[in-house]
Image (cartoon, rainbow, N blue to C red; front, side, top):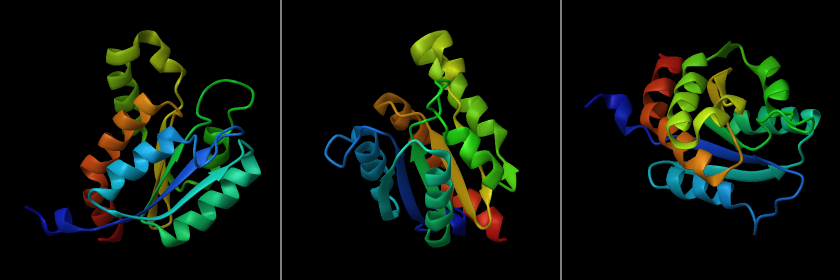
Length: 158
């Protein structure tokens, strides 16, 4: 086992939705439960699906987190603005994350998987992962995030 495998990381969870509340945010709850098993969740927040609000929240959360995981706003509707808001904040993208996420989603939901804008990248010393808003997508995506989280952060800081 590598030393980095023991890292207990700081995560933030950002739900992007115009309709969800703390009580109705099932995807955020799933992310919290899964991440909390291995790491610390330092903040959980909900913002409207608005590009500027998303960017402000990402910048704030990245300051206190090793990894920020978002849920919602990654689709193709006119209101979905997560991907367009987050991409300019990244110094590097991790295209393999979205590719793997969509490939695994294809096994579950078929060709609708290509409508997902799942995205990952680096902002400073933090990693940002943008997941769709559905609970099933969050279960799949958080599994992928957690499998390499410690290794990723170790590599960023090495």
